[in-house]
Image (cartoon, rainbow, N blue to C red):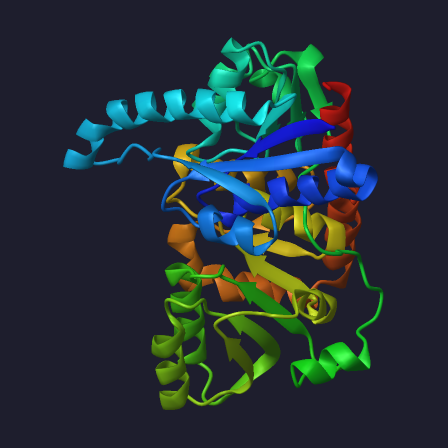
Amino acid sequence: MKKIILSGGGTGGHIYPAVAVAEALKRKWGDEVEILFVGAEGKMEMEKIPALGYNIKGLPMAGLQRRLDVRNLALPFKVLRSVNRAKQVIRDFGADVVAGFGGYASAPVLWSAQRMGIPTLIQEQNSYAGVTNKILAKRAKTICVAYDDMDRFFPAEKIVMTGNPLRGSFSPKQTKSKEALEYYGLKEDIPTLLIVGGSLGTRTLNEMMKHWIASLGGKAPIQVLWQTGKFYEKEMQAFLQAHPTENIWQGAFIDRMDYAYEVADVVLSRSGACTVSELCLVGKPTIFVPSPNVAEDHQTKNAQALVGKRAAEMVRDAEAIESGMARALTLLKNKVRLEELHQNISALGIADAAERVAAEIEKLW
């Protein structure tokens, strides 16, 4: 039996690629492979991973606060404890390979494994590599990436283009099914915009919608699926009650994302790595509004990687409230541009990314 440690967490963007790879390994090897996840104590992976049926160990790791904060004083001690704990977890489990997917816990686990002589693999999800992965890459055996030109950050001979592993089934749909339209109460002959703000929501996108709705006078000229996020749900529901508007579907979550992608003619979204990969697979014309509140501004760089290939458009966060909906409406009317974006973004999708990463792990056994 081969024993594999998968480490990553803090956000779904780090957790679910690791889970997708675990599922790919299990599909091929079944009981011949044993998988252990390693995460950070108190982070979402400590609940999400066991709920999916996998074992997980937690490290007392935390991130550096960006502003002066007393919690930063404890960080060196947490790092040391995490490294010692990671070594013990690796030793007790008897790992053959360790793969890191980003997040607080992956650094001490990869660092420890490398110094214990255990092969390591890094899965870099973004188009701009973080400092930690650049350091860890020096001793990693393989670096799986989702964007071109990553030899700016990593040794070229270690890089393998795999794409970002995703859970679920994402594929382009040529027509809008009756089931998908009825699910959201939409009409086939009215253009549809999908606005995705993430599970908690995005203040900028919600304020953009409020600004636009207030100018309409009760009826939108297009259909909008507006995912507001849990954090803003009550506030946005109250706003819509005060400004009732036809053709607007609003919800904290979108539980049938496949249907939402299917009916959307244009998507307006943040540009986290997994979201970008999903949109490539479904081939949807997209306007990205990158979050400015992420490390090394990697969402902007993700979006720019597609904009540079004429595969997406981008609106800066600071401009989105005033101009985001105008850009979306203009794009919805431009059939030639829509087809160009569809063709170019579809060409970037990698449907078997999880299997590709799993195959690279197998090579290190």
